[in-house]
Image (cartoon, rainbow over the protein chains, first blue to last red):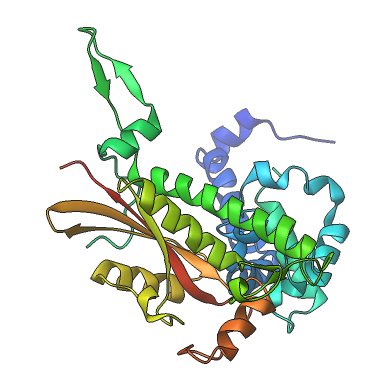
Amino acid sequence: MATISQEHLRKKNPGILLKTPMLIVVFLILFGCSNPEMELGEQVFKGTCKACHAGGLNGAPIYGNKRMWAKRLPQGIPVLVEHASSGYGLMPAKGGNTNLTEQEITAAVKFMVSKVAE
Amino acid sequence: MNKLLKTKSVKFGVAAVVASSALSLSGCGETEAKGIAPELYTDSLFAVMKADRTNYTKYVVKRLGPNGANVIKPDEHWQDIENGTLLPAQMFRAGAEAVAEMTDQFTYSLQSKWPINSQNAPKTPVETEGLEYIAENPGENFYGEETLGDTKYFTAVYPDVAVSSACSSCHNDHKDSPKTDFKVGDVMGGVIIRVPLES
């Protein structure tokens, strides 16, 4: 199979090696980074979870606090969702917002976990 | 007035400097107090308060109260009933009163725009501004400065949230409560921590 060397490309179109990565970045920003579940999770977090999880009230693991989440992450998403849905320790079921669906709670859990899982 | 003071490094009065233990040696062998950022200082105080309150709720009220071993009765009028014990908010307030007897280098209190006891309403413009800010911005803290008498203070306001239906229903049903539609998750008031700033 014929391949095009970088040298060939550079001679043929001097700007292409610079432009291509930039185009990829722009494409990712526009189309690739959108995650509906994360967006839903952030929305639920701000509307319900943040009241306690922003400041760690009643022992709630603080959003973004890796130390507090470290012993919870190994339990896995399904267990964390179950705890959030049914209530756990001093946390009320669904964080007190009984209108939340399982999909919304799952999204919120994944959103919070995403901030400490890297 | 600053709505949100971000990590403003200010030299503190005695309490903060002692708490920080952040002393460094200068080139001449002198000791220079570096102090601690007021926001970090009040956040740290609040972390201790928060942890103690949570542990009292979890290990005493829940474990031994009606939802646990049922050997104590957490109640607003705890002194009047057999085996009565303080509600978590009352225990918190008792701590604030005990600290006030020990020192005036910092104070803390539990206040609300909708207090059951009018003595717990905000008394200064910054307290009012802070309580309004945290009520309108759930999960956010408020930091400001104010001058009372001849002293400049750093004042932090942290949200006090209805973390269970017991909190919201107790306030909603109380005859002296000016607000009766609290829900779990609502900001019901705030913890105000005030520390003097070095002039």
